[in-house]
Image 1: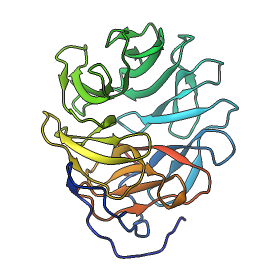
Image 2: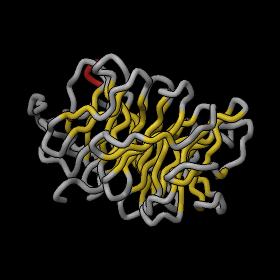
Image 3: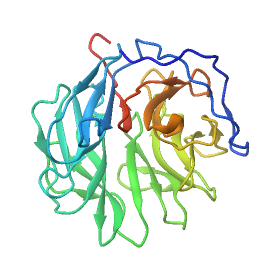
Amino acid sequence: MLCAALVLVVPAACTSGDPPGRATPTEQPSFPLPGDLAFESRRDGNPEIYLLTADGDEVRLTDDPGADIAPSWLADGSMLTWGSDRDGDREIFTMDADGTNVRQITHNEVFDRAPSWSPDGDEIAFASLVDGHFALYAVAAEGGRPRPLTSPSDWNDRHPTYSPDGTRIAFASSRDGNSEIYVMGVDGSGLTRLTDHPLGDSVPDWSPDGERIVFARGDREHHAIYTVDAGGGDAVRVTSGDNYDSEPSWSTDGSLIAFWSERDGNIDLYAVAPDGSGEQRLTTHPEPDYSPNWRPTSPGG
């Protein structure tokens, strides 16, 4: 069981124009969490996929000399997809929730990353490096020829994630000269830009009701977590402090947003309420932890 010192928690929500301010104090993890968290860690000397259970136990799911990164859950919580270079190229893989039945899904001989499962489980969206830039594709969950979602160009499209109803995909793109958050239909139509800010916006994730999108905003040195209405509008800052907070993931019940942060001199997993209150430090390992992703359905849940 992980633990951290219990201190006073100060609400941290603020508007996009507020200064970073001081870091929010963190409290002891409140177990059980609203679900299990899959994440990526180098704690055993190599990037692998781990599980932080709702009760606070940590379980290693992969064990391979290749780098296993950025896990994403199937909507029923029974399987995971992730990126790995275990075959020599960075490809997309799937496995059961206990780490068994590993399958390679893409065979593109290029850099495939950041997979996201559609809610119906039929396909997986991902970013693929084509001619020096990332474009978005979707592939059938059992494998096959990927279909393009965006066209390869001189910009980067990254981090696709399906809306809870399966009709839209949010992603980050530098197509207008700066990384911003966009939404489009699952066939690539109806492209809509949601954010417009001089700092870079990246790694979006949907609220469980599909009404808001959480994302990271910042530069090379500092990032914070924000949310924005799924139809666009002003972004609202969730985390405070002059930190580097990234890769947010919204819990299925909507109560918490998980992310990783470099605060406290180490990269660990944290969770915070969408209004910025009740921040919790979830992991304390000296090796870095990245890419938290909430399990949609936990055993018995």
